[in-house]
Length: 94
Image (cartoon, rainbow, N blue to C red):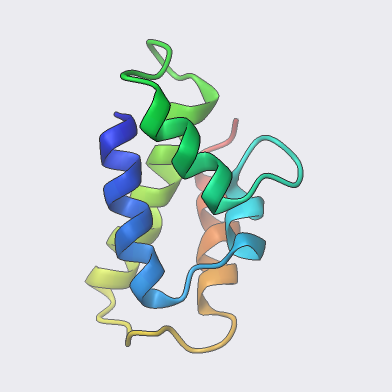
């Protein structure tokens, strides 16, 4: 699962996903994309079930799905990623 999180973050990078967007969906206040990538590179698996990091991965996947399904441009226009991150947080509560 951490590997999939890294893949999703790489996809979102092309759309202009930044720390401010990431902080909307992450459970630890002030966390950065860089710090989360480092964590995902260190661990082989997230906790089983609906651990917070697994739920963050699901939120990332939801955002990527919306971007691809909606045929959004790269980079995304201002505000799009913030709105999608907020929607993902609402759809998948921690």
